[in-house]
Image (cartoon, rainbow, N blue to C red; front, side, top):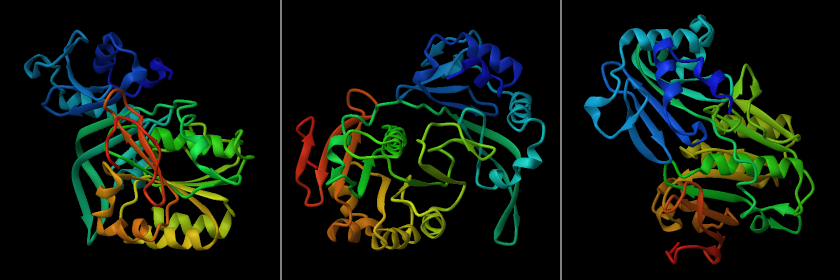
Length: 320
């Protein structure tokens, strides 16, 4: 990550504070700015307040209190002084900046009937730093292939356990080719610009040489668009969310295309209890389940299981 380039999106005062913080920016996951509240930083899964001197503290009263003017200046830098050009992204509640970092925004929503028209009085920002970890998928790659083809795979993970980072590296390795398979065409539906981190249409993260990306596109519509237009061998999506996604998954699998997907959860049994996914699990749509946790570190693989729930790899002695 280019730290100096990244810090340019912040106001001058906040930039000066963040330059002083005594941590590697590669370990920072989020920087939260709320008007009238102390600046909050999430690092290696732990929360800290940031003082005026750039020190990290657990004491709320010592944190730098974010002024409205600092938020406005930051938004001007984020939007390159042309926020109107990002109006469509703002309607979705986030902006993607150079480097693939995503800035979540909240404030007053302006409605046009039942549709979101715009957002104003932005008072809350959540800067989520994009991290690429080349090779983080190496430990799971041997388990994801049958006779040279990718297995339909669901990554199950609680929040902040590295599921998107793992998915990103799986996409890259499958696209480029690996010892387990030649390179394959991968279609990515990146609804929230978190996988590829596209900036002005170009992914800032390395997703491989045979990967096509639909950025800011709803997952269900995007999966069907890719099937019709790009002839992918594999489709990848992050965070399955509603029944439209499930119907699109059925179409993908019925067309012989392989699927990589993620979902929030803590176990296969947890997923079975969700009406949305129960059918897919019970009917064995997925051939592989990868469970993540952060017991010792972010992105730790808790277990890999086949469609029957048989453990292929298991750490920590915990049930699936």
